[in-house]
Length: 252
Image (cartoon, rainbow, N blue to C red):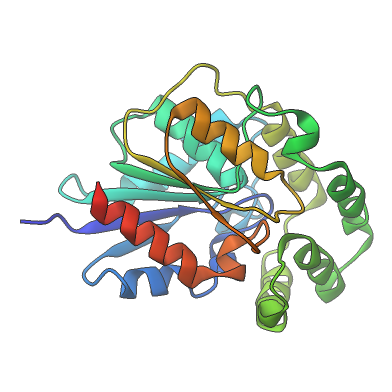
């Protein structure tokens, strides 16, 4: 009998569960009988009033509390993580290798695998320096122009992101703490034993696609690149992502 699939989703820097938009429900619909759980990074989402840890390792330990509350040993657990969430996923697989059966990492980067100017492109860093001076819709539009390449989804995505910003704004201190944790992150010589798929946007203007390629090469795992999508692959082409995830999950 096939085990019930349970997808766990981690978002990225100063993002939260609702930033996934319709993706979790669409993924669930494409996998009848499956479940999904989104886990926010401390300092964002349901935890936006809490201080964000200064290390990825501490983020893992705090987020694992939610995992343990939702997991069932009889399920097939699939981890899907993007950007900073992908760093958290890497540390998680290292510290708790029995928690998940498969993992999909999207547009992420690891210190020691890639150079600092690949992990965040200099032009992207300069662009992001303006974010603290902006508020509300203008702030979210500024971020979205960097991470999304597909203009047809811009208005819908921006409306959602503006709503999130009003309801659960991430503080500047927590933004700095998350940036610090991500910048300092190193995973060492760890190689995961479970099946891993890397997905990346070739035209990512925030993080070089070479970072995803470096992880795939070091871990000897498959990588699939979207030729036009940017950093926020789930906003630019969620249907493509679900197709690649389902092919990967069903093949292993």
